Length: 167
Image (tube, rainbow, N blue to C red; front, side, top):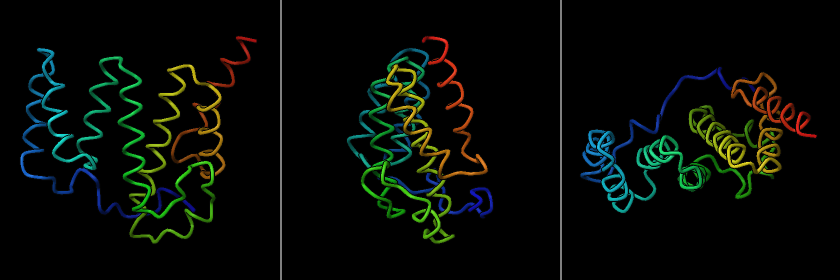
């Protein structure tokens, strides 16, 4: 399966949100420099806890604030929101190529979003020095993506090189 051979449809950021959420995210963007962005983001989260727009905004905010645990929590929540859309197993470790191949072409955008979100979880775990978890995620992605369209191979190589140098 070529993860680039599809027509993008159903992009998460095109989805409608609960009234006021878009405005709260915009308010947070305006308040970022002053350090007051978290409150509107959390208000948006309480209004729409399953909104990928909100979860991505939270991830970005926390990542750029170097609050990696919080960024990881938002990203894990996003994966939990995406998973049922593509009917993947509850545990990513059980994900097989057959799951990707069985996904209708109309859901390939969501499949890619799931895989990129899983990659982000692996990256955040790597930054948090949870290398076993990170390595397992990258190895899973490499096994599922033979053409490396998700770009996990470079992260796996980097992780393995760092482990080799530390040994």
